[in-house]
Image (cartoon, rainbow, N blue to C red; front, side, top):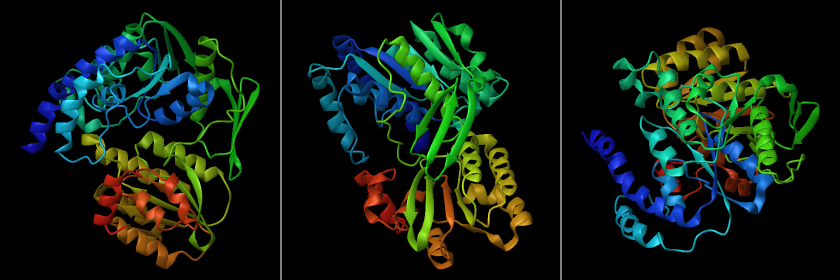
Length: 421
């Protein structure tokens, strides 16, 4: 009942903040660059930031129908508690007339968590440029209903159609992944110029503990971070954007910083190596990270895998696909966390791994198992939901590295303590 009430109020309340954000935008008049897609958005935004620097303002930690208006109005949720909304409601009209940012470019990350969000955000932002590089099953449960109504043949089509509203609203340039049939099917909806990015541009992708090299169109781009092969689309799109803006480019991407929870590498206790991809998970992003992890190094590799959330009717299928991918990876140990991956993946993994797969319902149990069973020198991949960043925090050799993990806000600290992390 409460969840249904929240869903019913989602857009009516969002329109309140959108109204004032629209006024603030009309005063500011920035060139709006929209970054969107099912996965990889934040990494792409950081790549663009490495190129544009202080020439632009960026919507860090904001990509929704509430987050983006809040970002425009310089509002933020700090506690995530209900009483905080009173302050937000009162301050929204006042922030309309606050000082506008000095930057003339606004790079904004936009998501489509639910039907209606693409239309809502696209008409608010009316971007000059949209970059859309991925479309897959994310937040699928929110789209099941409209598929059942017969409006779309599949949830993938429904999700891609919602993202397509961004193309409709774009007035100058769209940069897209031309390898995605789902994205290609939406291109008729845009009147903007289209730049197509293809995997054919990528000649090689080499990842090691020292970093990642991409050879794209005859040029080599080197990063001191672990980055999956799909990042090549983001590199190419970023360079295309910089060329369009007629700004100088930095082929070294020297100012790039990887977002927290997206394949960061840390030293762990007992001389272990931790690959932290714990921010979130869907099958597309999980397969990219797993395939990258499989290519690097040799020795004792462990995988700690949490649930993929909001998959709706596709939940069983997506978790079974993930289990089969882990089987093909042939790790020394596999640790599962959460009812979804256990319910839909454990039996498949058990047949292959036997006693080398273990399953837990709570993150504290995962932490205790790892502390008790790590012998030393293991390489451990963390991917999925359910507070895995709290598990990682307790396994770090250098405790100051905790500042580089995802979800560092006070509200998440409180929640992790409730889970005894």
